[in-house]
Structure formats: structure tokens, C-alpha cells
Image (cartoon, rainbow, N blue to C red; front, side, top):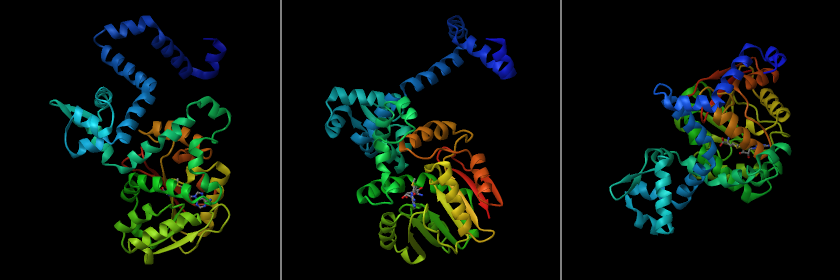
Length: 373
Ligand SMILES: C[S@@+](CC[C@H](N)C(=O)[O-])C[C@H]1O[C@@H](n2cnc3c(N)ncnc32)[C@H](O)[C@@H]1O
């Protein structure tokens, strides 16, 4: 390596250069595969690298399992291949190919002459939101077919941005509102449970969920904290759907519904805690900061803002924040995943007196930052 480069990047740069030189060398790779001491590490690393190479194929096998309903059928009881082939309307050879592939991924497992649900399949079915995510991923993957093109044009403009485009037109399109809100509501239990375990909402009297969609987060908190008064703010067509849902569940008299655009309209006052669940990362920095300032203005002194979303650089979940959501939001055409420390800095810039991160059990779905005015 050029000594000037080594000087600029320091000791760590020198170490990385040397390490990569060794790892890329066919001679070292052959040695690592042959030596009993390094063989397990070499195999692990080769598998991890191959998983990166083959990730899209795995995702499509998963999509076929969800779309065909094969996992649900196996959750009812084990099935023989021929029976499954008929039920999912795929020729026997195709069904067996899918089942073998799904078994390799832990989604199903062989049982005698047939097949049972695998442990990863059972975990997936136990979280309804995951199937919904998988079902809409064809939009994301269509946009990611040309990742460099997407990066060069700055994101958006594809299939996924169409799904949430209603927010940019202040919720004018009813069918888009329904599809997007339903997806959000289905995946909300993955998030709400984590947040409720990590933060004591029973310290508060009135909770306003801004960008709260159909109110799935509010309903989850309401079930845990019966005396909390609820407020829901979202675009008017989303609020109409939420109101109907709350009425059918007998929760409407505990809840104030406010339809509006949080980028233009003032937020309702009189709440001692405001939540922003999977909203901040949807917006570019200028709009995100404006939203934090608007919430700051609406809160009383000592009021709390709680930000709940998957975050960048979350220990143990960097792939979700930086890789998955980084590109998901790029395809959406707006926003970016932020680390907890970036969010804390934005909160202080918006006028909050303190901002702290709270631990959650599953940063893969949920990280949490609490700010006090
Ligand atoms: C990613 S969804 C999150 C929904 C919900 N908080 C959740 O976690 O399931 C973003 C929400 O923000 C709402 N939203 C987007 N732009 C908005 C705006 N300008 N004013 C009010 N709500 C908006 C959307 O309608 C949607 O319900």
C-alpha cells in the first residue's frame, strides 16, 4: 500500500489493509480450509459470505412459502408432498423442490414421508406482521433490481414509493391509504410490545400518537394502561379509518381523533406525552427537525416525546437499520435510518432539555429514545 495512504489512515488502516490482503489470498484460503484449527472459522465465514450472495434467492423461496400458504397448511398438521402439491396448486416436482429449499432455510422440516412446519416457519407465523412485510416486498425488490440506478437518482420514483405516495398528496387516495395503513397496523405488534416493556406509560395521563396510523400502537398501550387518555393525529383519511376501528372496539370515547398534516397544521396541545412510532425515519432531516420542533411547541414544560423505530447503528441489529431500512427508505424516496445519538442531537437542536436512549429486548424491530421538554 502507498505509504502516504497508510500515513493518512493510521494504524487501523494499516491493519485492515494487511488483514484483507491475507484473507483474499488463495494460498491463505487453502491453508485455512485444510488446517483443523481454522477450518470451522473458514466454513462459517464462507457460509456467511454465500448467504450475502444468495440472499435474494432465499427471500424469494420465503415469498413462495408465504404466498402459497404452505406454512399455514403445515401449521395445521404435517402433510405428504403430494397432498401439499394439490393444496398449493404446484406440480409435485415443483412442490418438492420448494419444500426442500424451505427445509434448508429452517422454514419446514422433513417428517417421515412428509413435511412438518420448521422452527423458523413457526416463529414467522407467530408474528403476523412478518408475513405482511414479505407479501409487500415484491414492490421493494422491483425497485432494488437496479440498486445503483436507485442510488444515483436519489431514491423513490418506483413501486414502493407508490404505496406511500398518499402521504405526499395529504392522503387523497383512499385505496393507497387502506393498503399502507393495513400493512403498518399488521406489523405494529412487533414494535408496540417492545416499547411498552421498555417504558412506563402509566406515569402519564394523556398520550398523543403522532402519525399513529390506524391506532394499533395506541390500542396496545391502552390495553396495558387502562386509565390513559388517548389522542391520535394522522392525515384525515387515515383518521377516518382509525375512528371506525376504535368505535367498533368500544375505545372511541377514550380517544380524541385529530386529522391534519403535521408538516403544516399545529399539533393538538394538552398531552403530557407524545409518541412518534416509525415516523421520524420516513422524513428527510429538514422535515424531521421541523416535526420535532412542532412537537416541542405542543408539549407542556416537563412533557415527554418518545421516539420508537428501528435505528441505525443499533448494537446487534446494524443490518436491519443500516442495510435493510437504509435501502427500504431509499426506495420509498424519503427519510433515512438514524442512530440513537443522531436522534438525540436532533432532539436537543429542537429544544428538548434531555434525550436518552432506553434499552429494548429486540433492537432488530425497535429502538427507543425518550426526550424531556
Ligand atoms: C410509517 S407509518 C407509521 C404508522 C404507525 N405509527 C405505525 O408505526 O404503525 C407513518 C404514518 O405517518 C402518517 N403521515 C405521513 N405524513 C404525514 C403528515 N404529513 N401528517 C400526518 N401524518 C402523516 C402516515 O399516514 C402513516 O400513518
